[in-house]
Image (tube, rainbow, N blue to C red):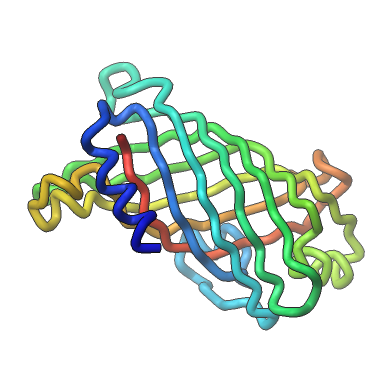
Length: 200
């Protein structure tokens, strides 16, 4: 882990911040997506399943229409630890993400919203259990969304090497979009995650 953090910090030497690299970790939630983004429910799943991810991105547009919005294309791999309920597996994601940038108290806060696809080599156990309860289908390929909130650690502590290094909270979401993916109407899964992301 310390070598990955050193890599993230050293990326300052190469670049103009068109690329991003993110490390994330989180746990499954029993709360629905709308409960999570309104902070009405952060209940952890009783199955204690976890996810760990490495994702990269490229900035397609900066300050769209002279407004504080940046657009990225992103993708990566995530490892799901199923806590013994079934074998662990990998997930690949590909998505577009837009950030709203807000300058507050000499720092930059970002709110990000992503939309794309998720392919998991196994259906997550939490999704299987929800499908059983709701008599719903399951699918390896589902719609992918994430909502993120983060801030620039370098600006917070006034360390140049940490600038464009963001610490944040993410809601990671898979769903069938009311049956558009694999006939999954109400099922899916949500994960509460923390992450560190470096732009370089």
